[in-house]
Length: 530
Image (cartoon, rainbow, N blue to C red):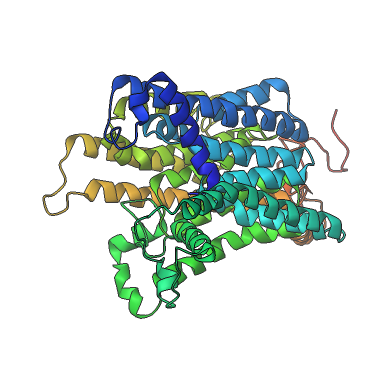
């Protein structure tokens, strides 16, 4: 635990002692539970959320919506939807966590980038890392962006050195209380209990004397690194909806240990899944790409990294949900995919929430979120428009989901609903008491893999790296169509297809018919009809 992570519990204990000294009395308060103490602890979560998370989110929406060119009404609507995110509310206020403090610092880091203050962005991100090491899920993406922005379109040594120096100083300030406490204990001569060195030091036969200054500080730092990267534990803990837990259901992973170490295998897969977001951000360091890259990178960590918990899904959900405040954030496509990711995330948390007795908040918040975004089971506005005819072969209207997307989402919602019926009314076999929990994790993993692919694909499209490919494809199709211009193909602007005309349907000629492909609204001579 870093110095910053100790500040919040210490502040809560000091303020709580003023109210009731018995709450945080040394030794005697262990196991102490009372209704007023629970109310106080829950209140600290709400206060910390308002001071950090909500404040940072409001400022971020202001900067991001302005850069995206959206109005106040759309920005406020997105703000309400983000604040009502069910997974964050259930974990922090139901399961009792302080994740919103870390997420608030991450949002403040993004907001500083949009405000063109990269040094403040470094400070806020170090604070997020210091509060919870889970913020490492975003570290490769923000590293690639800051490095790429310092090297392109021209080399800026001063900017790069300033970022490096500020980051080092911020880490030193965060770790200073931890190191100062260690030196103080050593100075007072406290007889602390023996702690064995971390596994990575013991394997290399490195011994440290905790009674010397160098040994005590090195041991403290090594313990912190050991807890941040817990390779001494198993590949995954409990039933979590990531790739390794799902694979272990069908193929026991301990069989692979004879060929490769599981931490190394996990590192390889994680690196391959975060490489696309890092490469795009390094080559195209544009702030508008950060939410996509953060979501893609965090999904890669959640699916393939070592020792993942259920609550870690909050990290990819945050930047993906922030896309609601983008230019297309309230479109049907974005609402459908962002709502789908949040629905799957809350679904995978249900076994954990059920153990905490949170079935009712789970149901209410999940249905409220689906109603706000127009998602099943309370609404179909994202998937169905009664004004459009249900005719096979009809060209897609602007802001309309593709048929395969609709089918996939509908089937997935049906599977999640059927699973809830099984979990409520059907007992698993006696030989497999965790069957429903394992099925939950496997179903959720499939949904998260698809969400990772969507975020990565959208990142590549928004970067504009495929513009030349689409232009070449349009020229090829144009040559096949006899030299006529093909509308709606290859017209890209910032990696997104233009939606200039909703009715530019092509009349495809049959071979040898002599008829040319003609866009609607134009005659054979190419002039618009009046």
